[in-house]
Structure formats: structure tokens, C-alpha cells
Amino acid sequence: MSLRLGRAIKSLLLIMVSVTGLRPMPGSGRRWPEIVPVRRTFSFSDVDRDSIALYLNGPQGKPLYWLGCHSTDFAGKPSDPFHDDEDDYYAMFDCHLHWLKDKDGYNLLSYDAADPRENFSRALTTSEDIEGRCADYPDWGLVRHIRVRGMRITLEFKDVELGKEPSPLWAGDPSAKEVKSFKLDLSIEPDERARSAFAEPPTYANPHWSQPGSTKPLSADCSKLILFRDFR
Image 1: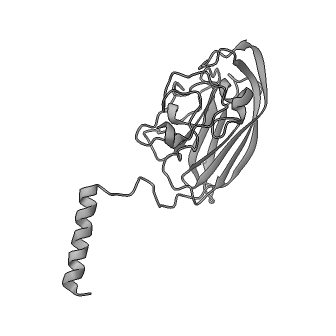
Image 2: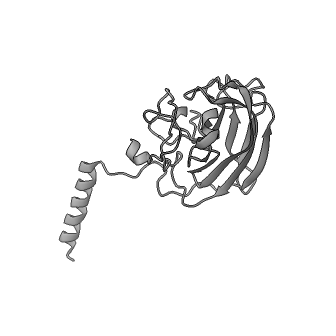
Image 3: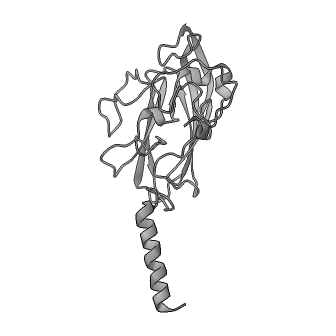
């Protein structure tokens, strides 16, 4: 290949990239800092008083991320270093993951990097999600796997105890009961395939929503699996 032809091809490629706006996605293809694996079980005997506040450390013991979980009616002492008033936590149970160097406090568990709101987080759980047939619905039921920044985070709800009163939060299903207590198995493992800066999109859409990120939950029997790519 002549030098002139090589330069011509290089120029053409640059023009194509410029015209199409082709550029790597944020965090795509990069290696994120390694974290020390976490495997713990948490007991929530009182949903509105118990919480999780956990630093994720690197191999040298340096804190890299902060994970916090509790309900929207949390009555304990705020522990989120990014949100003193705790107003950004929703529903029966909600988890946030923050990179400690990010002063904007974005929740990395959102799977929409362009609009990282709670509605786009599979770490947000309503009582309807973990009752009846919906409890076995993939991505949104009792077991949830979330991949982000070199990590595979698994949330598994166990020993869920329901009360007699209707669910007071996000009650898309009027027959859903409030959750009084549960246990949560938390697993955080290194995963080199998890390269995105925010959580990867789910395979299946939330069966309780009328549209992605909706704040108006619907009653659903969860008998039909809805692919997320079809839902959008």
C-alpha cells in the first residue's frame, strides 16, 4: 500500500466517524478498579428502621464505592454521604451505588446513563415485585443480577413476611400486602464482562410499568415475559 493511499484511507475513516458521530460509550471497553468480593446476609426485621451502609474496597483496602439500601419511609439515621435528606430513596426497598470520587452523587445502579433516575433502577423493589407469581419474574423478582463497572451485584430476597394491610407504596396491585420483614443475601463479585459505567439494561421489562421509567405502576399477574428491547 502506497503512503498516499494509506493517508487517503485514514482521512476517509476520520470523515466517517465525524459524520456518523461514532464514539465509544462512556465506560465502554475500559477496565474498572478491582473490588474485594462481598457476600453477606442482612436481616430486615423492621423494613422502615433497618438499612445497609457498606463501603466497597479495593484490594489495598481503599474505599472505592458506597452502597446504601433502605425504604422510602426509613426512620433511622441518614447514612448516605451523597444525600443527607435521604429523599432519593423510593418504594419498599431501594439501593444506591455511588463512586466516591463522583461529587454529583449519581446512582450507578440506574440503567439509563442519560437519565439516571430511580425509576430506571432494578435495585428499587416494591412489595408487588416479591409477592405471588411476580416473585419469580426474571430481573424484577426475588433474585436480581446487576452488572456494572467490573462487578456483578446479586440481590436475593428470602423469608419475606407479609402483613395483613395493603401495600402503602407504589400499589399498582390493590391485592398486594405490605412487607413486614425479609432477609437479603447480597453478593458482589468481580466480573470483567461488566464494562458499562451505569448498570446494564435488563433482559426483561418491569411487568408493572406502562412505559420505561414510568411512575404509574400497573397491576400485573406476571404470567407473560416482556423483553426489554420490545418494550422500549
